[in-house]
Image (cartoon, rainbow over all chains, first blue to last red; front, side, top):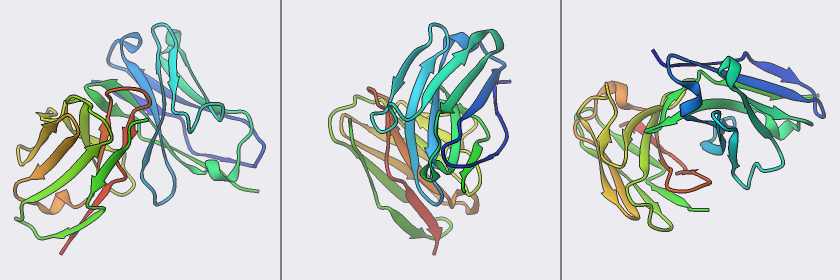
Amino acid sequence: EVQLVQSGAEVKKPGESLKISCKGSGYSFTSYWIGWVRQMPGKGLEWMGIIYPGDSDTRYSPSFQGQVTISADKSISTAYLQWSSLKASDTAMYYCARHGDNFDYWGQGTLVTVSS
Amino acid sequence: AIQMTQSPSSLSASVGDRVTITCRASQGIRNDLGWYQQKPGKAPKLLIYAASSLQSGVPSRFSGSGSGTDFTLTISSLQPEDFATYYCLQDYNYPHTFGQGTKLEIK
C-alpha cells in the first residue's frame, strides 16, 4: 500500500527555521517525483515545487523559489520542505504528494503555525 | 506560468443534480490535467487524471473531458458525499498550477 506520512504540526516564531518531512512507503521512492502543496487558512491549493528523489532534480514555482528549500534523502525514503527564516505568512497546511498519474497519493498534511 | 481559470467559484446544487465544473488553461496543455476533491480538514483526493481517466476507486458518476485549453468535470448525479471543493491541476509544464477551486454546496 502506497503511503506518505508527514511529520507533525509545528508552532514556531517568526525568524525561526523549520524542516518538515514526508516519508514514502509501499512503492519505489526513487522512481516518482514528490511535490509540495501549500494551503493557507481558508484558501485554495498552491503548487510549491517538486523533487525527483532518484537524482534530486528539483523544480520550484517562481512564487516559492528562494523562500523554501525542497530536498530528499533516498536512503530513508523521505522528502523535506524547509525554511531558513519563517514569517507569519508561512502559516498554512503543507501537503506532500506523489506525482504518478498527476498527484495520485497525498500525505495527511503538516500544519505550520508561525506566531510571535 | 500557465494560468488555470476555474468556474464557477461556487455552486449550489441538490442531490441527484448533474453538475459541471470547467477549467480553462491560458495555453494548450494537451490532456495533462487532473481533477481533485477536497473535503474540510482532509487532503485532496485525485478523481480524474489525464483529463478523462477515472482514478481507481472513484465512482463512475465522476467524469472528465477536454483537451488543449478547455476541460470539464461532470458529476452525473450528485450524492450527499460529493459536497466539497474541487480543483483542477495542470501538469503539462513547470510550475504546475491549480485552478482557484469550486465550492459545491447543498441547495
